[in-house]
Amino acid sequence: MRDCYDQTDKGFAEWQATGRIGAYEWGDHLDVVRAAVARGVTIRRVRVVSEPLSDYLRWEHACTEVNITAGEDIRWLPRTKAADLLLPGADCWVFDHRVVRWNFQRGDGTNPHHYTFSSDPRTVRDIVAAFEMAWDRATPHEEYKTD
Image (cartoon, rainbow, N blue to C red):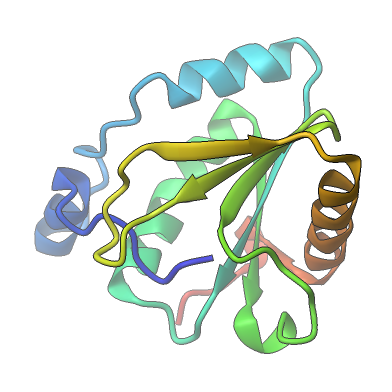
């Protein structure tokens, strides 16, 4: 939902200098994704973006193949195609159509790792509905062109 996140990331700096994505620190994210997918969990992500993409999002696009190899299904949705959708005001994940985890970033793009959760059925319902509409409009990663 944002055009940039933490631009102090070593991986972003390396990509800007060399075009390589090797320095990004995935932490345990890829292992968590692989384990969930092995249990039969589907992990879908829609990236709502401004076009042309910011340098940060072009880097994120370059890194996305790693997410996909781990088992995520990722699509890209230009804001011009999302303007009439009632999308949430912050990044979030939905787990099992029961819980929303909100991820709040600072204005400078850094992540304080401040998360809140909601299991209110109305909130979950509305977020899931918004996601499904965005998913239907979004372009699969392998078809989305950055230029």
